[in-house]
Length: 62
Image 1 (tube, helix red, strand yellow):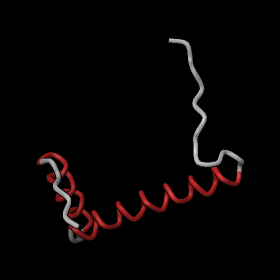
Image 2 (spheres, helix red, strand yellow):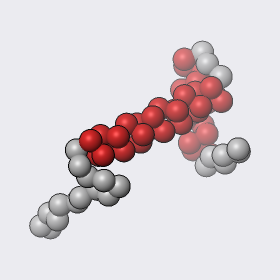
Image 3 (cartoon, one colour):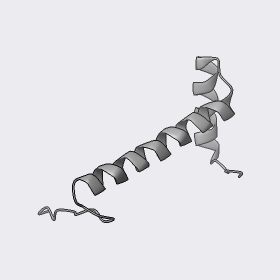
Image 4 (cartoon, helix red, strand yellow):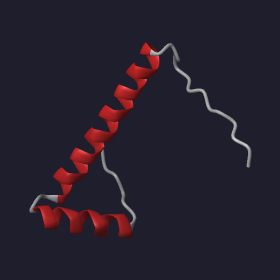
């Protein structure tokens, strides 16, 4: 898989990786893994709470 980043995000990724002394690709992989794990956890929690495969949104007045 190849992911194209816009120049601003790529620059921010390289800056953050440099500050951490890490490879930018490894930082990106860690971020993607955290995102996927969070989505999986949210889906499990939604199922446990009886929400099924959908999420209820509340209508808030403007």
